[in-house]
Amino acid sequence: MINFESQYEKVVGGESKEERKEAEKRIQDRLERLDTEAVGEFEVDKTEQEEKIIETSEDAVDEMVERWGGEPKKLPPHKIHILEPEAVGQLTAGKLASAFYAPGAQFVGIERRGSGVDFATSVAHEFFHAKSYKAAQVMEDGKDAPWRSGVQVYEFKDKRVAYFGALEEAIVGESTRLFFEEKVKNNPMFKDEVEAVEEIKKWLRSSASERKLSDEQKKAVDIFIEELYSIPDAIKVAEVLVGDKDDEYKRGFLEGAFSKINEERTDIMAERYEERHKLYELMDQIIENSSFETREELFEEFAKANFSGSLLPLAKIVENALGKGAFRRVAEDFKEEL
Image 1 (cartoon, helix red, strand yellow):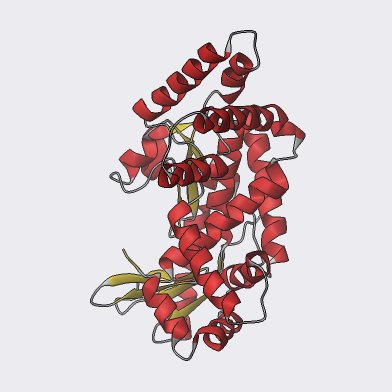
Image 2 (cartoon, rainbow, N blue to C red):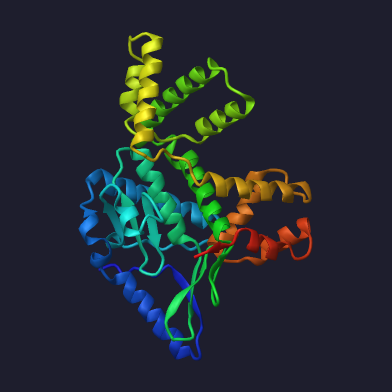
């Protein structure tokens, strides 16, 4: 039997070492516990293909996390749950959609997808959350609660607050985008779907170029196409686009396909666009006032802070570029109320 290790590196707070040890035991117990009550009625059995994608994705995520100074631990198979469509919305009272990671119970829930690329990137996104640096704290009532999740720092006083909360989400989103570029795009397992999406994007660009769009609309279309790397039934849609129908029919078919996606509120892949672009803006400010030359180079420092848990090197970079107290301002600017 494999003994799986908790993702939590340490426990802080409490009035004694014994209290912290008890908290560590509770955290480990929750890792070993089944999540039947939490997801039972929504869970479906994993298919062989899903198991293969989960295994491949976790290995790839672990490799990237190690590159950034983290020490990832494997999640037990019983902590990775495949759920019925729309289950996440019901489980989280509409606060989340499609997938989630529950840090206290240390499990992942992912709705079944019709797209292998979408499934792989969703799995990777939640694994990046799970394998971000983790630390817990003992509260005044003796119970344990999260203290750190990547760069995120929790505070449970007058308000329940996560400082750097949106920054952690941005780092995970950017890590997932890199996962797609490095681990999915050229993987034979996803070749047909990746090529189909590229064909669809080509047609979307062509269709947009023939419309009278304002500069603002053109920019929005360019962003949409750039962010797109998973579409429901992409292979079937692409088959029509490369078929022998005339171009007018193909454009009408493509518009119909996207209208259906919109009506059914189906997710198409865009990795935390708002949070990521807020991070890009911050990185651009730092680059302007430092020796860093590219976002890619600077992002490595953000990723190291998130997955190794060491905030000091990143704090120095931010403060040297943006002035004393800038790191605290970033904590506030990226704060999330829980």
